[in-house]
Image (cartoon, rainbow, N blue to C red; front, side, top):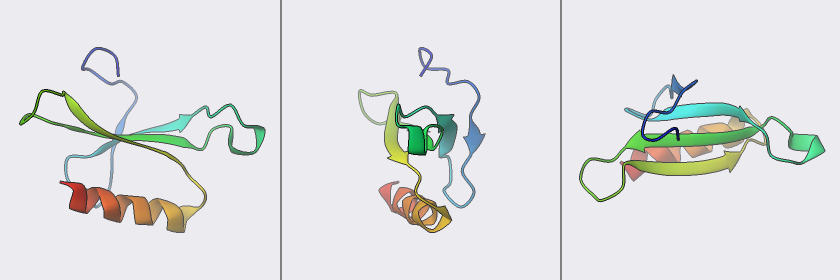
Length: 73
């Protein structure tokens, strides 16, 4: 996460304050660039970020993940 300053990220539409690192290499040929790292600044606890890691299957799967992030706060 680049010592608290993640680069090459974009905001996640529909999930306030969440950002996404897309096209993360997974090491699997069939999903080689479908890895995703979602993160959100976490000021209330000892950790800098809340992080969720996923291998995207399709758009519906990614939409479920975004819904999960909305409720994770």
